[in-house]
Length: 348
Ligand SMILES: Cc1ncc(C[n+]2csc(CCOP(=O)(O)OP(=O)(O)O)c2C)c(N)n1
Ligand SMILES: [Mg+2]
Image (cartoon, rainbow, N blue to C red; front, side, top):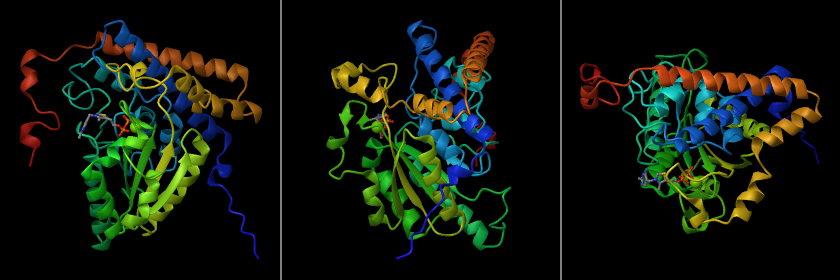
């Protein structure tokens, strides 16, 4: 019998990339914490958090051709969006609903990340609607390549579409339709399900009768993978394979990253009504940032002084983003009648 030793793609990441990944996770967490504080201070009206999901998102982002491949995030994707180029100030401008807010001039809800330049597609609030849209984008990518309009190896062109959502949202019809379409057409598509075992107050076992979302992949004829979503490098490894599959014409992948949200669903939720404090405390021991931090410290890639620098830098960036957003003007009252996605004259 031959033993095939498959090298992990993450083993080839150099120290500066590993630190960049860590920085992305840390900055996202510190911004997120500030958003909660701003809400509790009555300065912003709503926050929905990506805490606990940072490894799943950063591991994914670093496997993509960032800013070129299309991504269709969901509301928890702060770390993913930052890794693709949304700035802390962009995010703060959304929280404060400012006139020059990057995604919609302050009309869209916060955490509806979008950027035409960075190929982040604007989502609507009904969950899972992004899945058939992203599969449609993947179809367009494939079609343009088949017609010879673009070279499939041209790295300046989008070569795949990624859609993200939570496990509860896979109960929606749109998810099944998008996955089926991706399977039938062998699309360059990746679906990342961030499974945090709750859909607001509804636990996983009330949503599905199988152990893993990824078990359904076979039914659509796509590859399915379950990964520890609190391990950034494990996520990166499975995403590198999914990306290669998409780029090489091998079809779609359903990646299920098992994780947890250690905070309430949103600023308007009280999670004490549906889960115990002991359960939350247990999961916090698996915090993806602590985990990565400890492993980088152990490997001598990170040290206490560098960590201190990162913390100071994160604090300074968050402070500046908040100050810039607070100083920025609000939209004029009549702008409430404007469009969310594009000015009327730009719409087809
Ligand atoms: C079609 C639709 N139904 C209900 C809602 C209200 N809602 C918003 S988020 C959410 C929970 C989604 O849970 P999950 O997919 O597991 O994602 P998570 O928030 O846990 O990351 C619900 C029910 C919605 N936005 N859209
Ligand atoms: Mg969930």
